[in-house]
Image: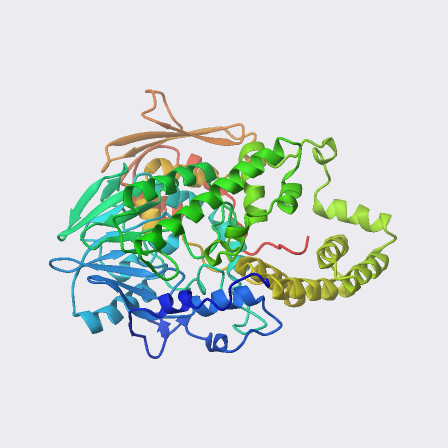
Length: 594
């Protein structure tokens, strides 16, 4: 901590540069009056308190800047009205929108703020730079969809995986990640490292009309020339050569990236990101005088941009290569996380600090990508699940009271990490052990107040809140009606298959043929051995039920609207049997109790 350059104020100068105006009052509501965004972070103007890590406090102060900013001639950003920035590029007739925030209400408010100072320019195009909902969810707040929409090839596939396949579990864990129930205060919510918070408004989706499929692909929309640089997971950055501006999307930011978000996701490929950033330096490093991104504030100066990209590239490479070096020496993921140290230049650099991602978690992510969850130790091959293990550990230690006594000793020795482990066993073994719950909540609070990582802080403090007050309901997921309407027929059937209660379906057999008339597609759904199998263009064989319908009718039928108006042959009992076997996700499952 003592080595961090707190006296360097360049980030604050950059964060304030180009400021034009702010939304006043900074309150955004739905049509029925529900608040989805407000500015309640005024306390961040004060000095850092004892309840926050000074480095995270500094980061939160920078992220709390909000309003309309001029990045360079013809490029503007509205920052601090959602987790993401709304970026606007002026064209010949109107304005292009890059990454239209998470919710329609916030996107509409951001566009209104821009128009109040730059004129009532129509939106002439939209660019999504990621398949995560905070990069596209607000799109219907800026357009009705009658404009070109650009995204990297594979966007819809990844958007479905993020929002639908594991969406309920991700939404539940995102409650912890974003700290949605925490009070905004020096003791509570300070943001999540890469921004203040995610808005809670209406999510939407307009499917892309043009795919970005290759590095160097050029597109001209409304007179704006763009050179694209797609990467993994349907992400893309882009150069605006006529403005000498580089849009980095999520490839490099003002903090360490997360290769595996605590909310859950597919593990990012660190080596692929090294290649991507190396290409960016080579292709664009000398062609940009300003770089901005989906989160945070811009960076000016060619040498600064190249240095910024170089340090992020070196960070990814170091995390990847050193993790592999150590795992090949026999260290496990947790051991590598404790052993790995960043080079001094990266350790002292503000934009590679662990505000959102962290070196230890990223090392574990690299380990998981290559070797999976199992560390090779046979003792870990067939362990009891957490509650059953906890009961046995507590018994070995002499009961719940003895575990609490041990935990108090470790708290006195300031070993909060092990105190949390012990108390977690006590709570899992006996949820009614109030002394253990209260003490674990106290430990989580202290760990949260000492965390430099914003999402770690939120997880710890949300854990304390849940222990004290019970389960905090999940926020709504991002599986919006627009997303459901944009699914392919195959994706629709995949979303049904993952809801099938396999054990209940072990002895069921059925087959349904679907003729989707407006798409000219034929599909067969077969239930066999508790698995729902999909086959496109099936052979001419008889099925229990044949349905002829439009895609809209298909979505409606599978969401409970019935078969009225659907042409059918065979018994609808097959469909009723299938629907009866579908399970519903549990949106508010327990996390810190068994």
